[in-house]
Length: 269
Image (cartoon, rainbow, N blue to C red; front, side, top):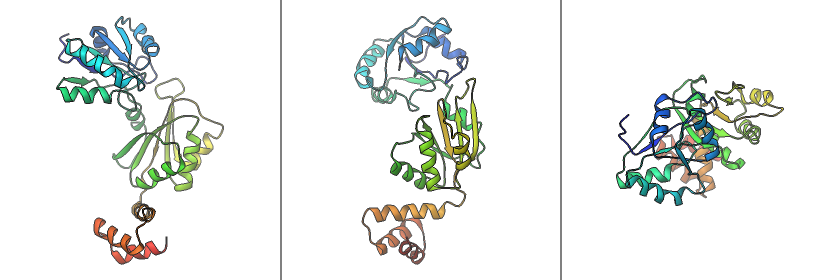
């Protein structure tokens, strides 16, 4: 094949090793080297497809120090494939530092379509709206989780979480929105793949004895989220020290709300 680009961002399987495109295999064979998170993980994939291209490490701990080396190689007309351990680079994986620098220098690069846990999961989950927000890994603290749930009550919120933390996260979601609908996927594309949808209480009950595997989760949008959204705005302004009357003026002005109605709600909170 004739290459048009010097850097290729290539998705790799999220579970089933056969979930890789023919074009990805072709490019991995032809580039000068492959930048990957963990050379041991990537080597297993390469061995399976009889790919002998050299690998170098490129992960979140050495991302910045590797950029200069990669840029020099590209400027010397070398071709590079960027991969992560699983899925698409830069979706909660390294790559942003490199691509930002390439854009500044006008060096062309491209990304191949392929495996991604978010899209694989969403294609199996019933939702009333296509709109969603992806926040990456859910933060650890209860306050941060609560803030996200309230802030995005009117949207489908998609996130990653670890098997060690997901039950705690679900418990916090239940505390904030006891009737929340949740979808949870684990081990996508693997032998024990499982996708469950139900109330947060039902999901907690189903996995009460623990859960294994890589996890993607979605909190469904709240159908009548206007009140929740207004409550969040009021709480946020209160936390910043604004007086009740000022809060009513700010919200009514910025969000076309009735000032008297907002003020009454402020007083009742």
